[in-house]
Length: 139
Image (cartoon, rainbow, N blue to C red; front, side, top):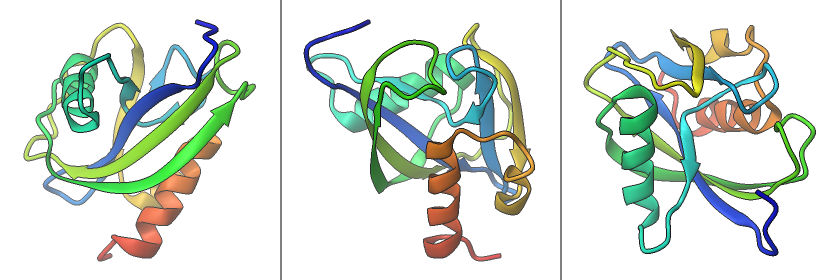
């Protein structure tokens, strides 16, 4: 995966109809929990990549997509290998809580933002959930 340039990725903190957020454990983040997402393909807009990744990983259709924050991961030890990511994070909503996962997702949970902190979140997701609580949460 080592490339001479940073890899752009997209992910979203998704709120379901019951106001809970979706967190996932994947095979790529060494036992830490995060949010669904992945690499942006050539010729794909950020939003198109986000919609595709959510379909592939958890079979959710997203709406009310809005930019949340930008993060950077440079050879982060939480990730399974050396990589330099530009993490473009969004907030989005889903009308459904029904998940169908692909083989990247180990476990998943719909939790309140506060309850998310009882899971071993990776640092990037922890920052995103904290940002969500400060700027978006109505509870």
